Length: 128
Image 1: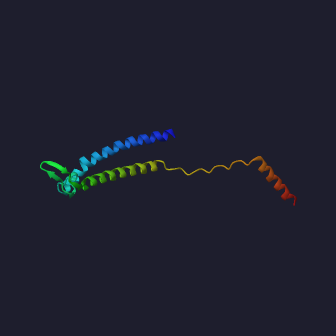
Image 2: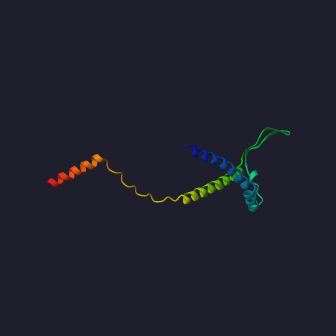
């Protein structure tokens, strides 16, 4: 059991680091390219304002209420990349582990009393 716990801990640490790498990949490389292809759209700023901010001069009394769907799209792309990567790793592990067909085990030897009873049965059949 100790080996499984250590394996799981290593997986969590590597998974956390991998998540940061994928987040950087999406935030710094993929989404800017997608934004440029769509027409210079910055996904970090995509939002729908539900309620405007209440201002008192330069001071914000109540902040604006927004739905930040651009940030959600980035997080969704992060998730899809991580899920696809995990799928590929598990698929590779399963291919590597291709199980060999189970060998048939030899039947266990019969106890002495069962062997003796079978001999008695056979002798009685012969007497008839």
